[in-house]
Amino acid sequence: MKIGFFPGCSLHGTGKEYGESLQAITVPLGIELAEIRDWACCGATSAHATNHLLGIALPARTLAQAEEEKHGEVLAPCAACYSRLAAARDEIAHDPTLAQRVNGILGKPFANSVAVLNIVDLLVKMAPVIKQKTTHPLTGMKVASYYGCLLVRPPKVTNCAEFESPQVMEEVVRATGATPVEWPKKLDCCGGGFSLSRSASVVRLGREILENARSAGADVLLVACPMCQSNLDMRQQAMSRRSTKPFDMPILYITQLVGMALGCDSKSLGLGRHFVSTAPATKFMAAASTPAAHTNQPTATKEA
Image (tube, rainbow, N blue to C red; front, side, top):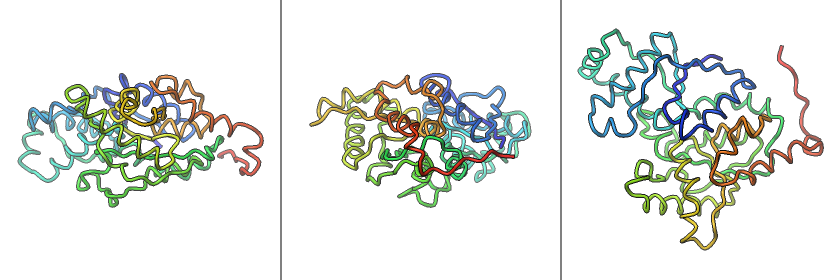
């Protein structure tokens, strides 16, 4: 399966472990990522807040490049990148005047024909393959799937039918052998772009999210957004100051969870790059590697 790939800025920088874990699972899942040549920043978050046309033209340039490279779909793993690319595609499709202005800026034909996928869109399609390829079922691990603001909203852009109570991440969790928990705050905002300007608010919001996940019995919290991962991972010490119990919950990317189930090593998944130790999560992977853990597992068959 070959798909166009837009890594965005985060997967090469602050979310490096996201990029590493994505690359680690591509081979066992039979995915080939074709990185778009000469891609540019999507404009999240400042461009579209400063200049609407710029906020559309930046992602449109990348989509035009993907179109030129004959990609029917482009994967944007970062939730913010996905939101900007998908929103630009939607606005151009519904506003002929805007489309004309963007085409003039791009200086080349642009049919707006490339579909934009987020990582959950891709992995939920691959759930049967993930289940088949799992060598280290994460039995007993309880996972709180955190969607945040951008993966399923606004529904007119994301085309998510269950945007008020999505279950697609949970489907991927089940494919790994782990157990998803139901909890009310899986769509709440983590504070996003206010990380620097309103850090106290970000800490408060994150504390409420983690307390809710913990009360639901979660061992780990699962994300698909570098900003959410950063806010919920590195701020747990600050969150603990006003909590009755200190936080030590691993914040895993969905690609890391899948990689653990597929038997990828911890280094390739970037599990050592987190602020909060991922040991409480990797113990389930270690348990799955023992002979007893595989007693009732079907024998894997090689593909032809």
